[in-house]
Amino acid sequence: MGSPFVIGAAAFYLALSALGMAWLSYGGYDYGVLLPPSDNILPHSMVGILAGALLLIAWRLAEKYLPAAQRLSQELAEALPTIGSAGVAALAATSAVGEEIFFRGAMQSALGPIVSTIIFGVLHGLFDRRFILWMVFATLAGAIFAAATQITGNILAATIAHALVNGVNLRRLMREFC
Image (tube, rainbow, N blue to C red):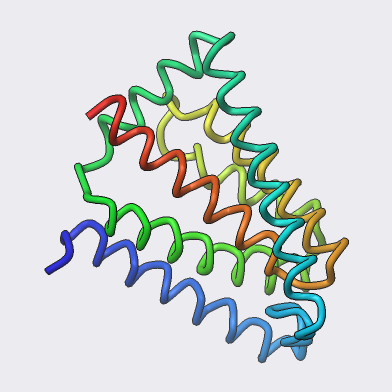
């Protein structure tokens, strides 16, 4: 059986996905934003992998040169319960899918990339002052996810990048700090 944390998070992200789908439907927006045409899956996936890799490199450089980034990684690791590899994969996948359907699929379709990026970033650090740097990084990541969505016309690249960043960073946090 999965950890209660992972199950609760998956339920939250499933609800966020449903809310995003409802927003797309209610607003009359194109569901095509959710997936590329079948002949574009590979190139759009490569855009996602490249974007995710760039964000991972940026965060590792921040940790190397900014003590605040090192402290943030430690604090995030301490805030998370220990979960196994399957939990990391489930959390990375469900958070990426849920957030990208909602923020890039629905919100970006309705309000544009700038507003969706700002809201995405702010929500990542709003509730705890210790996580202000996380909010800044999430805003940068959100801008890259928004750009990938604008360039490709769908959320596949953003979802892959998001899952890659979350998966690699969660696994590393669990391994290095827990």
